[in-house]
Image (cartoon, rainbow, N blue to C red):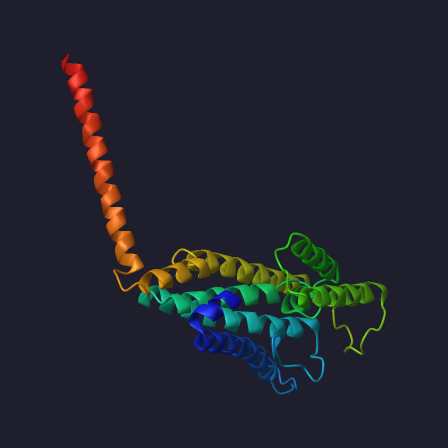
Length: 261
C-alpha cells in the first residue's frame, strides 16, 4: 500500500481512509440495530479506526453479528471499487479494491479483538488459539512484517489463554456463550463464506491490477514523450504474433517440401 501511495499520492490515501470508515460504519450500524451503546468513531494514525461497544450485548451471537458487519460492509465497498476499476480500467481503483480486500481479510484473522477473533470466539475459545498459531506462522514466514502484528498476536495469546483458564473474565450476561448448535453453525458458515468471497474477489481483481513496479516502469516510459507503454506493448504483441505466424508457415512449407521428395 505504501508503494501505491507513492505512485497515486493523496487520492490513494483518501481512498484508504474511506474504506476504513465504511468498515467501521458497518460495526456502528449493527450496534445501532441491536441497540448497543457505542463510542464515537476514533481514527488512530497509522493504525486504523475503532468504534467500541460501551456494554456487552445479550449474547455472543449478537457480538459476532456486530463483528462481522464491519468486514461485510467493507468488502462490499472494495467490491464496488473493483467493479468500477474494471469497467473504467482505473488502476487506482483496482489498487484500492485490493487493499480493501486485504484489510478485511486481515481483520477476519481469529486473533484476540480482531473481528475474526470476536466472530469465531462466539463459538469456542479454541479458535483463538488456532488464530494465534496462524498469526505466528504469518510472522515467521515473513508474510506480515508490520510490528503491530506482534502486539496483536501477543494480546490475542493472552486473551485466548485467559478465556480457557477463566482469568480476568468480564461480567457477561448469563449464558452469554450458551448458543444453539444451529446458531454456531450459522456463525461459522457466514465466516467461511465471507473469507471465500474475499479470496475469490481478490483473485479476480488481480487479473487486471498492475503491480507498483509495473506502474512505475510505465510512468518512466511515458515520461519519454513517445508512444505509451500500452501502445508499445500492443504493437510488440502484434509483431510477435506475426513472427509466430511466419514461423508456422515456414514449418508447413518445409513439411510439404519434404513430402514432395
